[in-house]
Length: 170
Image (cartoon, rainbow, N blue to C red; front, side, top):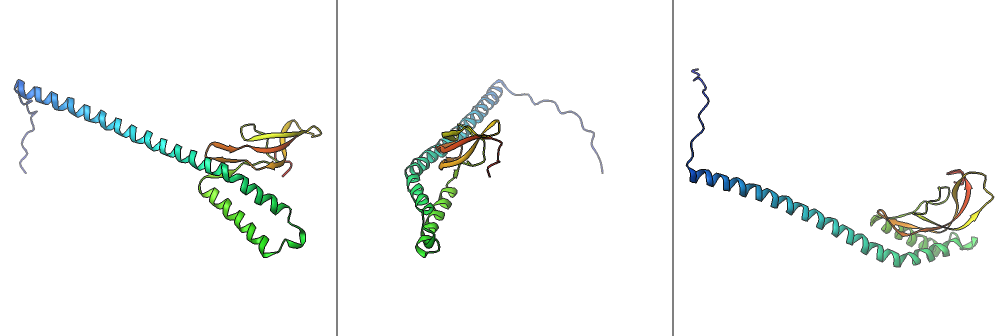
């Protein structure tokens, strides 16, 4: 193997016109990179806006359907003991379960209440029991379910609060 000594090759000399063309190519390359970055940013903003609009639409529809779910749940709480095993009642329970699954699938979740610390971001206190023995406001009863979709509250949970320690009521 014959190895030729490697010498630093001299920079090729360019004419003034060629140097001008090289500068133009570099300037156009930089402009193209900026345009691509701008395009990527626009695409990301657009995708975020679409997701936000979807959440608003889902929230709007769910807000209208929540009273229906509430009524089903209220009806199931007042089923007479002798009808608890009735097929009709089981069918209604199945409808409620199916509705809850659909809500979960689209990102709607129920706000945790009983035994949890009161949080005004998620809960609306309807009454306060002063006879508790703790130093923290704890939810003792849920009067109406609350729901969130993502980070947004669809409806605050209406709750009764007492002074106590977290998760003592569970």
